[in-house]
Length: 86
Image (cartoon, rainbow, N blue to C red):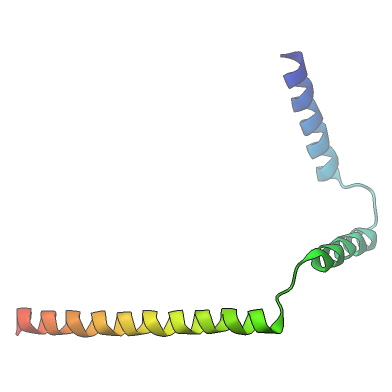
């Protein structure tokens, strides 16, 4: 129980410090953020040109199939409504 209350107090203290700001100048915080972004982007495994082409082909084919399905359903429902209401 005491450990749980201590953890809650720690979280509250952290939230209070974050709300007040760390005292670090804004320019420094922005620079640190951008450095972190740069580090994360270096860790990303980027697709090769061949993989990218393959993924794009899959997306395009799926898009064409979905458009065709929607068109077909639109025609079927239009005919049904036309027959129903004359």
